[in-house]
Amino acid sequence: MKSETRIQIDASRPEDRAAIGEIARRAGVFTREEKDSIFELFDTHLQSPDSGYEWFSARAGERVVGFACYGPTPFAQGAYDLYWICTDPDGQGRGVGRALFAAMDAEIRNRKGRLMMIWTSGGREYMPASKFYERMGCELSARIRDYYKPGEDMVVFVKYYNSNP
Image (cartoon, rainbow, N blue to C red; front, side, top):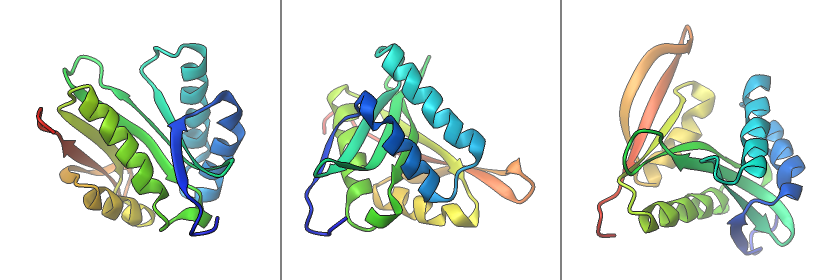
C-alpha cells in the first residue's frame, strides 16, 4: 500500500470475506480458532444484519487493507464491545487502524454509547495493539493473570464516552 493512498472506511461487503481472512492470516498473531471465529462472526452478520456484529472495511482504492468488528454489549445499556480490529501488515503505521477506530468511535457516539470494552491478550506479541488502544484514548482497566494460558494474561481496555461529544 502506498503511503499517499487515501483510506476509505465503509461497511464491509460480502466480497470482503476472503480479504478479511487473508489480513487476519498475515497478521501472524491469531490462532486457527481465532481466525475461524472471524469468519463465524462475519458470516453471522451477513446472514442476519441485526445480529449485533457490525463490520467496517478499510480500503486503499479497491483493496481491503483492514477491518473492524464491534457491536452493542448484551444486557449493558450504552456499552459496546470491540471484537476485532486488524490492519494488513503492509499498511501498519499508515493510519488504517486509526481510521477504523475513528469510524467505530463516530458510530458509538452517534448512538449515545457510554463505553467500549476491548478484551485482548497481554502477551508480548500484542504489545503494539495495547499501545495503539492507549493512543486511541482507551485506558487499561483490568488484567487477569494467566487467562489465555500460563504466562499469557488477558487485558481489558475501556474507552469512555460522555453523552455530549
